[in-house]
Length: 291
Image 1 (cartoon, rainbow, N blue to C red):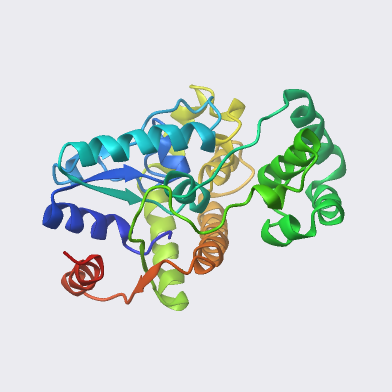
Image 2 (image 1 turned 90 degrees about the vertical axis):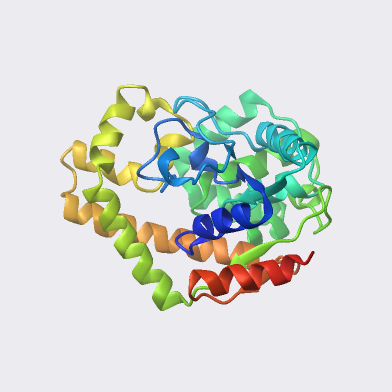
């Protein structure tokens, strides 16, 4: 999950096991979105190969079905080289897409466009209320503020005539794995998030966003909604001060972390590791992974 120290653990495991990292953070797929996604600079990757980073332009839509194909190819290629594949990231659906039996119903551009129009005119809550009437199970699992997932659920219902919840998978691996997460207590995690938001703002987030706007960020379907970049665009448009934006990023990231935790807590296969000194966390992870 966000700000738990998973990147450091992944590098430690890669060095210990001869591994390579496959990214499962949807926003780190984008070229140029570095500061705001806490993407590890190449110089800090300790020579460990990383895959599924910087594969999309900010104008492209991130599609989980396309990611599933590409990530599974990378995982298989790493294993074929005799290395340990390490899937690392906090985008829960992308993790499950890479690992689990998960199929993606087709899309209908006209249906999608009409739902997006309605989201703009009627609001996200109205669409979520409609989803609750059509598919209560899906509505219970989708945050009303997540307009993209609400729209996708309604699109699937319209295209297939079946509940979207019927397409949600059981916890069954297509790619066998051992899943680890670091269980950072909420007060400590909140402090880490606040410090990271401040570091991003001081580290060039606004300037990075300005450069990305020249490459079409504002027209991007997925990238322009990323936490951090939304607030930085407000700074550039003089709608918020840097201090206000930093606070907004902190709040939005904490909300994201809560949603991630809720998602991953539902998966009984995950082994939760206690936080602590890096050597201790690594030792606990290696014990869990076994020989």
